[in-house]
Length: 378
Image 1 (cartoon, rainbow, N blue to C red):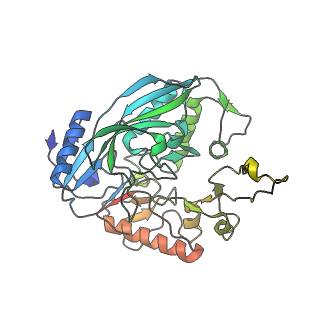
Image 2: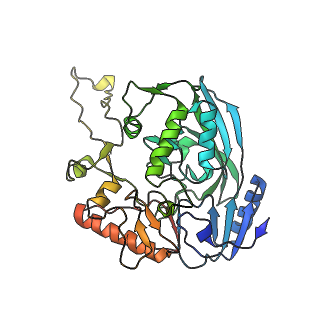
Image 3: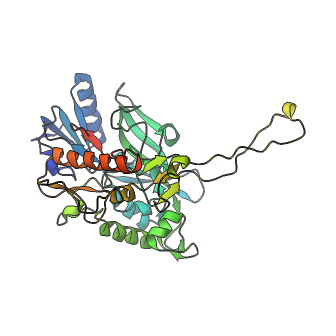
């Protein structure tokens, strides 16, 4: 394996924290990646698999193990069993936004609203990435993975990955371990072959972000360009000259709460139903039918709450920082914690804990971190 001189993780993560690990290996091919993973798992040494470093919050102490950089690349076009659709199989180390640009250039719809999200394709299913109402669960067909427990390589359909709001069976949630420890080798998406013409934009959240009416028609390229523009205004597109982008994107997840809890929040707090409000279907066995159909009990869907709104209305405005700290909320978006220049992981953690405390005191809700935490506690 191409072992290299360890590079400080502060140079490889978008939050710019972390020292050089004990060992670092670059995996340029799938075979190299499989080999180094099997070797590390057999030896039982600590292992950190690194893609784009955009969803990691790494502590200040050196990682005492091997960091594997996933540098595999490539997009393969495949036929789909569904008419009007195309499948793309993409290597795990491929840049996500490069994939979005490729899909749009090919006239393939389904991921254009996720333009500008930093990181690699292999990391996308781990937290079911999403933006403006699009999530990878909507287009993911399957993944190829290597299982940590057995070292076996398998192709697993998306239906078996436990994909939910910013989660999957792979995600190591804060305070818990992954349900299925594995490393994704490739991702296969199924995208609609719609071409380059103008068409209506599905999804109220995306239309609102782009200022479109339901009857407006635009091209995939138009959507991607305007999503990128919107993300840049929020400091959510990586830019070496802009400290507001020295972040892990949204540091806290938008909260999923019950409808009854959502009603305790101020009415102006932005919220979206998690599931469509569909009429429930009642099935009565013929033998049990007594001549009437009882009214089905209405079920309220859970509600997604804007974490950025909660933070700002807990009194923490954009640009807020603790005294003498080099960590601050982005001056463009209250949901991004930023490293304003050689800040430590502990400075960022102090700010995160302070934000959690203020939101809990004001609204009775504990915000959960979105990045994977390595060697750091909140």
